[in-house]
Length: 245
Image 1 (cartoon, one colour):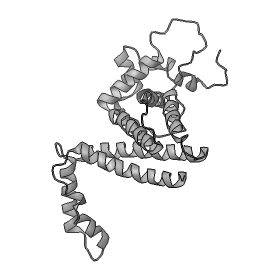
Image 2 (cartoon, rainbow, N blue to C red):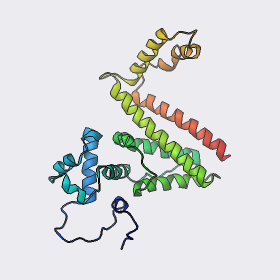
Image 3 (spheres, rainbow, N blue to C red):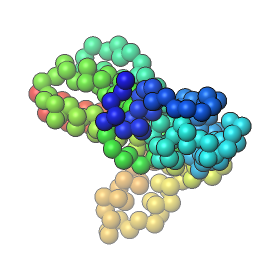
Image 4 (cartoon, helix red, strand yellow):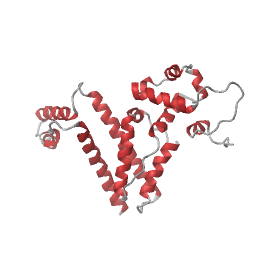
């Protein structure tokens, strides 16, 4: 028997048995509702995830879904944890390499479900899959001499960086002209700003826009994105290494 002290939303998040109720046997369950909501978000975006839409897709009314989720906000929380899934095994031995692998794995998940980065974080990780990712990171950080506060800080910093990078990449891709590659967009941006920026007023910015940073021709988008992601991640890990030492 689950303690009544555990809120109903947490019981549903962890798929714990609810107290039995009289009446007809439910035709769905939490997993079916959440899986369908994730499918809709993956295909049509987060804006399409409404209780009426999810209910219609499942052949029931939107109101009937309140038997399985307490609110739209709770459904979003359930969706994020469901989409994360369990983390893959981390094979690297050195903690820095392992954290790099952990971050790249989380990025891969969020790239498959970019809508998850649009949901505001309303509290600390609470779902079973979120805790599984936390456990994976803590197991890596156990190889360092960092205390608990620093371990939590490192997890939050890297997790936040990953989510921000995926969201920004998704938004920039949506803002580019149809069919325009990242390299072409960056090159056009650099060339335009190089002509506009006054070297006397903005000497450092002028040097930046005339540099090779925005001049990578015909580079595959994936390679550019990977390089940008790893540059930022390595800067973070440099700081972690300094503190760990």
